[in-house]
Length: 473
Ligand code: MN
Ligand code: MN
Image 1 (cartoon, rainbow, N blue to C red):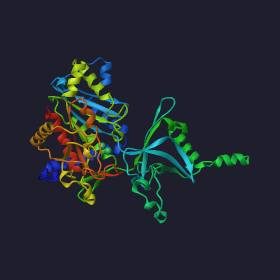
Image 2: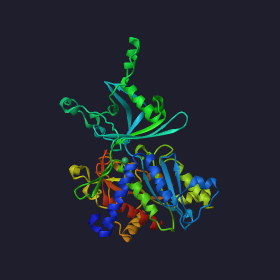
Image 3: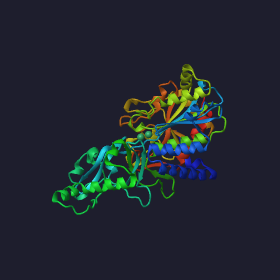
Image 4: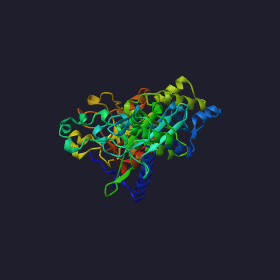
């Protein structure tokens, strides 16, 4: 089967749009390094586009009608938003879904300690990481500290030009003979990913007794860090207990290549699909046939668990509330709505990497620049754990994309027996709706810096718009 390169399908106007869209996307990445930061940006963006908060509408006893736009945020980490269509909701919605959490290092609840003159924050990595990739690179800390009085302190250190950064050390090559004999998954172990946050002891006044002098010197670097945390943020050591601090690669998204055709950035899995899905929702005409819906969730990287993951009832509850404000709610109507919906479960797909060619089936892999990706199934060897989309649904989607001239490719993650991965697709499919995995190809997925093609990002957004306007099955 002949595969088109997406760049070659663009006219001059589109080529300009690709760059504009990439710039917006890169800004989104820079300002959204955690799921909470993504939610802040998404809420600001959709509110500016006329979306109203569902909970406020419920409280004020307002009703909804065709063309209305409404959103609901769950625990500052997940969001669902709807543009109400002309048809009854029980006929089904067209749903885009993606996730906004990304692999990273999370700070533990009792993290601060001193050793060998360094102050450290102990971490527990989140999601699938090659641990050796996270040493000796500049890292930033993002998150929240919730104090006993209920107030929240927001932390964001390491992104501004004059901010300090943090890092994980690695053994110098000169002494690494034994280390380099180890398997790659043991070269750097999970407990070796603690970040260095200081090296300067707190200077205290001359003490009267020798005992006082000694106790002042004990853990003086750690004390110095606590002093800074107190002064800058008003937080004490025990406040780490109720904190969510995420350690991520410091620095902004960059254009990559002499031709500037690619984007190199942290967190593109899966903010690339989240951003382009959100933008597609905002490009819809004032009236669509079916209700358009976009779900951007947390916790995909650790199994879609918890109150803010896709397995949470949060989404179903929000749909029920929306139907209620439309005067359409009943348990049966809700079930019909979910069962008759169509969904693109959007996540990143592995891009073919010629350096590691033997890991891929060249005929069934996504190519960077090859357009939007469809994975009929994901899963591990033998399709285990996969949502395997129906041929009928694929036929429907294919017809839409050909009509709207969206460039797409079909792919598997890699060779059949090598491994695999999951997405949120199988969870929505439990309602009996048509779901297919789709998205954008990424090179070096889950690395601190991941690469995408600007053309693919733009093409995904075009594909989402075509889907929202035309899917009906
Ligand atoms: Mn993903
Ligand atoms: Mn992932």
